[in-house]
Amino acid sequence: MGELDLGWDDEERPSRHRRRAASSPRGRRKGRGGKTFLALFISLLVFGGLAFGAYIGVDRVKDMFTAADYNGGGTGEVTVEVLQDQYAADIAATLVEKDVVKSAKAFVEAAKKDERSKKLQPGFYKLRKQMRAADALSLMLDPKSRLVNKVTLPEGLTYQDTFKKLSEVTKIPYEEFEKASQDTKALGLSDVWFTRQDKKEVAKSIEGFLFPATYDFPPNVKDATTVLKIIINRFNQEIDSLGFIDGVQSSLRISPYEALIAASIAQVEGLDKDQEGIVRVLYNRVYSGKFPCNCLQVDSTVNYYLRITGKGAKPSTELLNSELHNKKNPYNAHDVPGMPIGPISMPGTSALKAAINPPKHDYYFFLAIDTAGNTAYAKTFPEFEKLWAQAQKNGVK
Image (tube, rainbow, N blue to C red; front, side, top):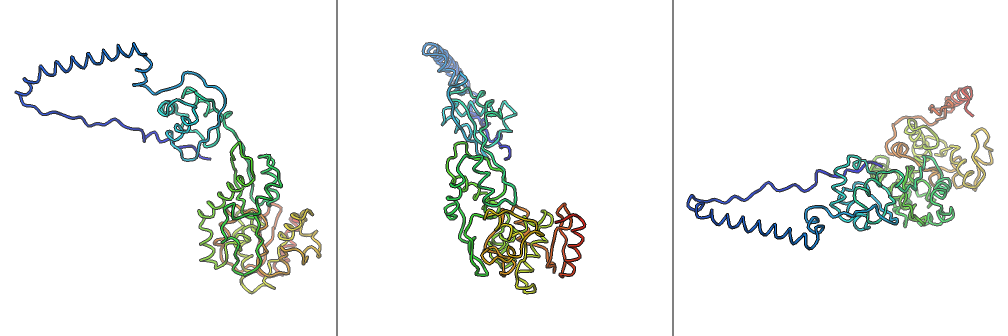
């Protein structure tokens, strides 16, 4: 997460306007005695007021000129959240509301004096009640005070892998994530995601929608729904930023769901730099009408089904014919035309971009040509066989 712009330039500035009274020479002579009396009156008022202030308590008078602040280091514990894009005044208001500092002005002034305050990170902080503003700021700048409930979700995970990682960090049982994931609409997913242009069946699953990123969850989060909503919200933000929905509907004339499936396949099939080319092969096979049965014929969908059914993935050379052509597998892409029933992984930004506007080419085959994962392409099956022989020499299994 980025640093906060605390907005020091937005501080109030003293007015430069001063009233000036016009007067004639006669008026000045006439008013001199009046000014002398007025000055004497003000002096008496000020000194009398100060004397009265000393009588009623110096602290009260001092508060008229300085920001109210607590004197001690505070007691107890209180959790405070700092949001992205908050200004110093916003943070100060939260601290006052939580009774961490006595006044917003005291915290803002402390922040202005400390250059480190501009590096304050969004997140949750463990502070104390009734602290000196400078002490509260120092504590917030101490990494030990930041409550971290962080998890990194890499690209290409399945929903099962994702739930396991989330459960490990949040201590929320895996089964609760499974249960919460069933109501995709409640989590923030629009119905547009579960409509297909090809009218095929839809796997109304969370797969493909848990965007790969690093998440900093609230330290007191207790339910799976809250966690999943945060991740889905991040997915929606990324989709909006990429113009994904409009992009695939206008330029490709396919449903966003089919494009998401293609992105999820490209994510596990190739390196970031190769995903655009892979997506185009997938589209060529399914939508061009020039490939046998308009089937994808990729092994990654077979392996996905093996993983989610507890059997484990295999190298392509070890997949059985019965597994490749399993009619009970809803993700069968060797015999069933079109994109499979749903996504097979969580695609990241590069795969999503690839699915929107892949380069135009007439390749119908791709494969990893070396152990580094670089992709090679072929137009015909004989060309593919030559590439496969080269890949085996390079150690690809």
